[in-house]
Image (cartoon, rainbow, N blue to C red; front, side, top):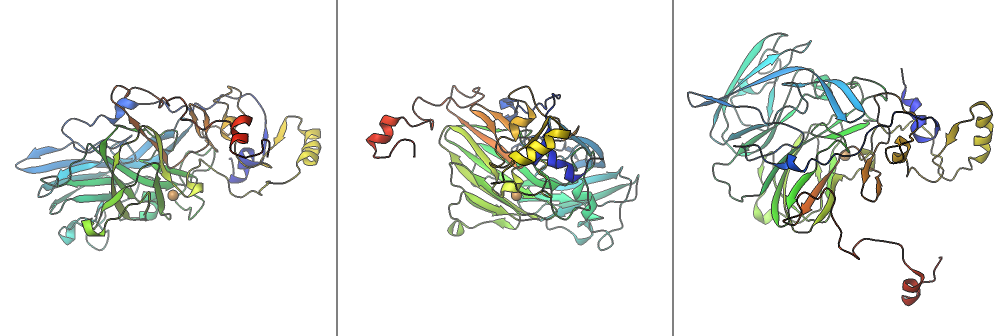
Length: 428
Ligand SMILES: [Cu+2]
């Protein structure tokens, strides 16, 4: 069993050995942004729940069950979810719809579904013991109600909440307005969540109260997150929900200012909107943001809490920044010649240790992604976790995997002549 302490491997000392390098290259799936036919929203790395109309009622079926889930290449775990996946399928309906949602329980314990943010008859609210009996193992319950108001909502269990949400049971519930007051070109759905998965382990730990080490968007950790690809000038909406156990997420968009146009409580009045580049999506809430993507590029969208932009970071270790490791290295090398201490100059470079750039990585526990980042056009992207990309492209460039920077628009080493011309002494 690999303990958290073994993440010393990742942060301070590790045995250099050729290993099967984790494949971290974010395979660009630019076509993935294609909106599914007949749907107005799109859930990156997710699906939309099929709907069958019976007698004017929109009928759907959720199956709560164990699922084998891949967070990104290199990390799989046995989670719980709906219809074979976490995050569960996005429900997309229209205001005024009557919905009938069957929930089949294939978990090893009872469950319920709470329709978070939706006003409905009390007995449909899904709180075990309070508004209904739990759905026993093997049983199917029926929820039926009219969705009166448009908005961005969520669904999740209200039985053994701590366990079931920590295992991945959650989904987004989008109620579209009959007439869109402010049409957008891309209506993107994202669920934020956090997991505690020991390096080398295969199951999330629902008992964790802090030190969550896998942070996800739609249950994917960067570099496993699919990018959002848009054409320059398009209007983009992100509907962001957060059902993490303990952490709010401070979601930051590079380059573009956005407005929060709605929460799960309803639309924000025009007079109350203001420009932001970062918004806090607190636990148990949704924030809907809109912006115009009017500058080409590969732009980051991520949680700004730095420990949420990493993969399987170990925290129970001393900082070695500024330490003189030479003597320690010498002593350790007597018994373990291939040992390597690192971290005295910061944590940068950890991603390369996976060997995806060099093909000569160090050995990490099987099925783990400690400090894994992504491979970018200029080298390592030293981020993971709750991080994705918004790829804004001019017409004709939609298939460019990476943005092609015009000459002279990339930060680069200053020449001595440039420095002197601007009155800065070279070499300082
Ligand atoms: Cu966060």
